[in-house]
Length: 478
Image (cartoon, rainbow, N blue to C red; front, top):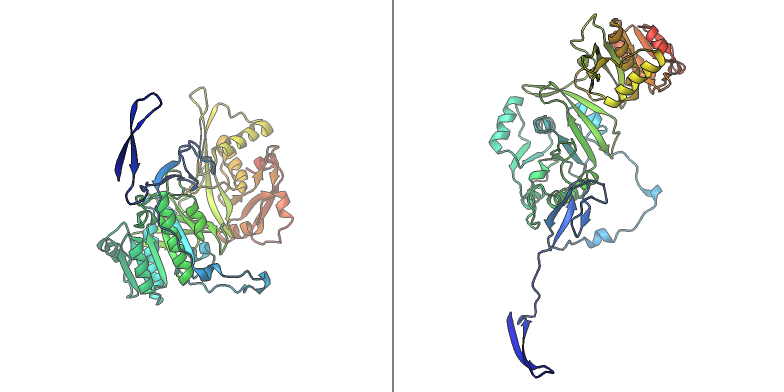
């Protein structure tokens, strides 16, 4: 590039020096293009915005460069013609078991060929441990498994594997973060199952942003999705979570995958819960319960018995409730403590359930039963660390609060469930018969439930059913 200078005379007789840029090669200067992405939903904008128009999040836009590489599409893929719905085969896909019946239930019956599964959870919760055990189970069945780690070295993985026991020769390890290399290895090895740990460490060279950014996570997941669908290889992806408890990165990541699993629980506790929040091949209401031990995670086949271990006897404020997680009934202990306050404003604390729901139920007790709780502190806890928001928990919360307030012990062989309205009425809940049968199986002799739910129940021997229509009738049973 040079500057061409010319001298001209203007109308007043003055000489002007004109400088003009000229490019000898006839090419324009290439400018690096950047766009702004929303970290929550992946919304793209040419300029920075304070609030995302897509999801409404404030301060979520980040600037990232955009690669100039053009995307090439397969001509055969674009030439496909639409077909009639009745001509599409509706046969069930042959699923592969993971060796864990609890995990298979959450997945909808097992691993689907070509499925893309995202596993999220807090640091140290056991995501890598669970997937390494899945690799061990599937490799022992003769499946060729490829475990790709971008966070740990091969020796670190080996140390963790030694605590679990012996592994077969059908599992291969790869420590790599370059997606181009990973793609070549997958196409060359042709494994039957692939584990990616984690997606935030994987990067593509043609994208200028750092690993874990919006562009890298989105494009890397898109490449893995094409590998899974094109070669019918089930791929498990580990994702980090934010402080709000959602998978870090763009929200489009959860839309691209087939299944989203969240690994929940306190890292200092012994139990873990895996919950499906999205599943294209099954229900999203199922959960799987695991127990963390020194040799890895062990599945808990009877969560109700596990959750009720160590329950106190002859203690007021303790009530057992039966809740439904998908098709599985789970019995949990509800604890309440009512004490006289020493300050002008009483304190309300809820652990494991909605704080506002507890305040609402206490207001119902004050209005419908005439109990003055304005001078008392209230503490509610779901034993075991579970987080529950099911309406069937209401009647058990009311019973526990009354038991602690009156200092009267609820019979240890009594179970309670039902929804409570603002008028004090006890409303019906779904799957009442399954709840009663689960309580009977664990040795409970008495069940307090909504009166309207008793109409659809068949005769069940060995357990006494007591129907209540409002909170006054429930209080009379304490």
